[in-house]
Image (cartoon, rainbow, N blue to C red; front, side, top):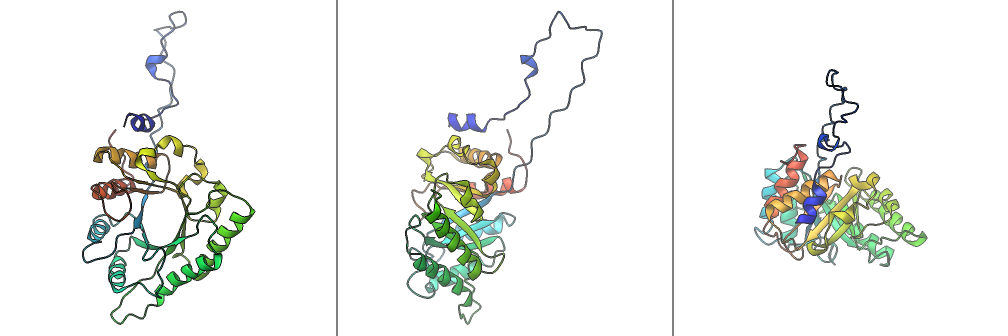
Length: 297
């Protein structure tokens, strides 16, 4: 973790007093030292949210760690991606387990459900993509007899193209506009996931863009510094296969927040079908960022 500690170390534009020695030829000890401007206090950390790919099938108690975190950190926003069948699935509505567990998610005001839709790098048939979006939209009208609520509040477009050209611009703009038409205002959060740093113009079409989705072995804050500062408040990071300590995870969350990133997900799992050993650490550290309280140096 030497590389990360170097990246996350405090930086200052002011020279250290020890590096500006007194000039014996001009210094007059009888005169008071020149007035100096007090150093600026560091800005409080920007609240971050958790962008969770919840690809865990909702068997009884399978989502309990999520419910526990939602209850423990009510001021932390969780954008939760569900993926019943590489999208909404073949049926009009998900199965009874999904219906029950999603309904429970909606008991927590800080839980916001996103439906998974693949674009296959802007090559998937656009009508098929829009059909998936329409299915998720129709979940809001599920005719439950016991108060079931399975509405989604946005769409997670996976395998988004990172190259901006006439074709990809039109494709991504069209499907984004379709989401805005089908989902109500305030409940139509759009995420693009190219998984790599992409053209900044894509940020104009989405509320959030995943600029890094990779295994932890390939993860590095140095690469994220190439993300334009003007869009970092809409940029998110996902790292899987994390094999560091809890303290190192906290340091990464702190560093991402200092750099201005919005959404964070780090897991010890190789994929997204389990909670991993440090789910609680992640939840707690993101929640701490959300309070504006700075981490201990």
